[in-house]
Image 1 (cartoon, rainbow, N blue to C red):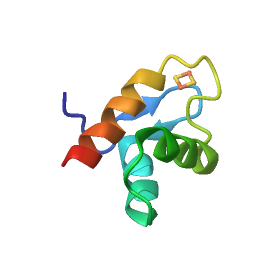
Image 2: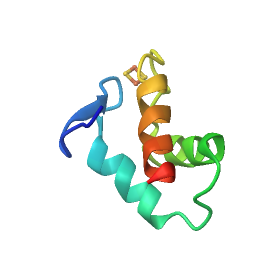
Image 3: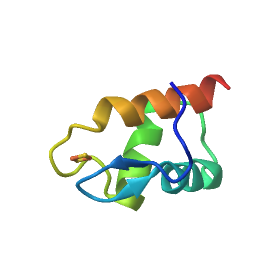
Image 4: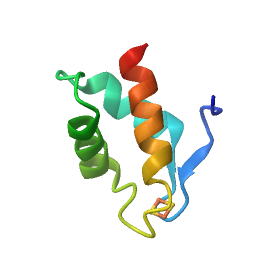
Length: 67
Ligand code: FES
């Protein structure tokens, strides 16, 4: 599934797809989905509320990793 850049992925913390992509682009170790998730979470605080966006964010990160 593709999301628009300004789409809010995490509603609790108002994190958009662009926010997530920005963190991923800065990352030097773009290989492990779980590690990237932790990094994205650290920077954006996404998925620290209800947790409902967790799977969406993992999906986005794995899409980016697999190209
Ligand atoms: S939507 Fe992301 S934590 Fe609730």
